[in-house]
Image (cartoon, rainbow, N blue to C red; front, side, top):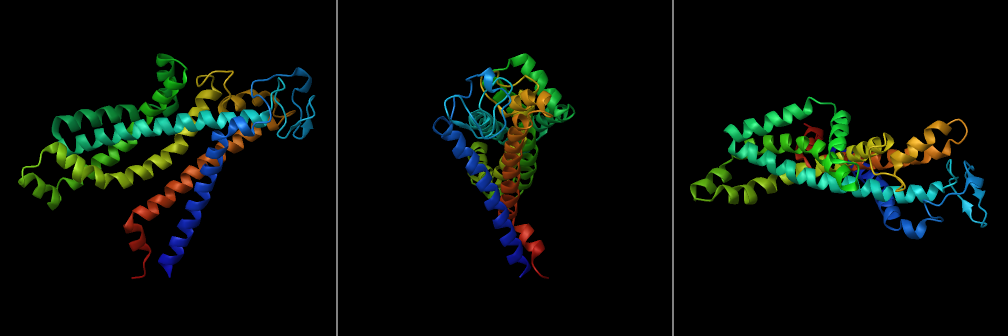
Length: 287
């Protein structure tokens, strides 16, 4: 009975997380068709209008307008595209690079392990946001640069976990048997090590998605992310900050969107961890 309750809670948590991610992902894909206005179109006559205000053309600004009369809903939908593209791309490449480096470090050990893990330790010694700002200052503020910066700051988590798994797996009998049969290191890594670390990497990637969204929003808030006129959630927060007392909607709605996407990623990651780690179910089973 205990395991069943744990499973039901995990399923509910995972479904809520997937719904949050799916709704925002669909909204981002169809943003050009859902947006009632051009996200960059300005009208000073309609600056800081509250939600539900009708525009000059008779259309409704459902989430209001910002300080230069741009439609908040349209900017929110197009900003979702930037956040998801940057986050998914950064998580994808950092996860791939970090997993390969971690497996290489754990399987071969010795000098390779020492060098890679010391690099990881040095990176962990720097505050994440400060490191990202330094990389942006070096690489620039284009979309590709932001993806590279977030990826560079996130590979360590994958590398350390995959290294630990590789250290454990290389002592297993099936790996020793493959070595005795003359299998090359490349074949052992690709056929035996990587498939056994994939589930853990998927969980980390899901959790890292929320972190990537927050980091991209932070960089945009500081003016170091994707530059205007491209709408971003962090940029919208920065634009709305001076008007919190007079036009709360400008910053509130992008803040809610960031919260929902990060919450969805975290709930999905927790659910995947419960599902893919059988030891959690064993601990929940009656003795």
